Image: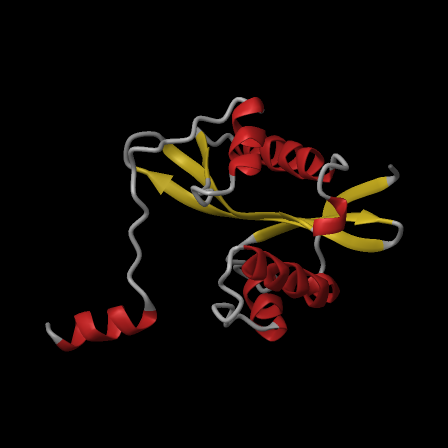
Length: 159
């Protein structure tokens, strides 16, 4: 397999969004994606980027991505969050996921972070096995908590 892992560019965001939508379909949330190419370009490539993205190219086509952003832990200090590691369905098992995760870990190490966090959906056993094989600890006793845009508005309205 001949592939290349590199930093994403603004022009890659069309392909990045396509992979995001493919993941949403896989996770049975195909109508949940609201972000646009314009959002990704604005948010990832301005003076103060909200995220850093790596892409995996195979045969001159983007077939995978890893999107990370900075966080801060009150217990550990600087950490990064891996929002998504996506490999196109046809390329799963090809080594692209490992190559992308390797790049994220090297990136975090170079930043001097104390931890890299991410979530995995509980029924995606192949992904869970992949992460555990790489040495990640899957915390099955923690629940993810979210407040949606509508929830934020409702919360504010009650203040």
